[in-house]
Amino acid sequence: MKKIIITGRVQGVFFRYLAEKKAQELNIKGSVRNISDGKLEIIAKGEDENMQKFINWCKVGPEYARVEGITLENLPDRELHDFRILY
Image 1 (cartoon, rainbow, N blue to C red):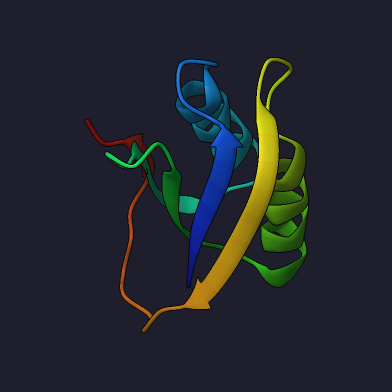
Image 2 (image 1 turned 90 degrees about the vertical axis):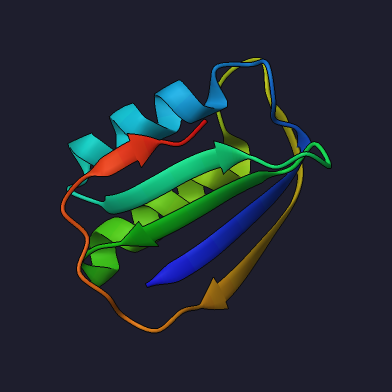
């Protein structure tokens, strides 16, 4: 399971909504939320190949996003049932 922090112009560009759609497409479980400092936080768990595809998508993001950086952190594994947007 990974924590993905994305920096740049990532809020107000449908990043959370499209991340949810991409995660569902790749059978990734977890969540996405805006952080008050303007970053985006994603908690994600899935098969290795699908996780790599998801991380690669996060490095680019949706059309109007401008991803400046991405950091990955391993988290202890826990059971997740779906992918959701947190507000």
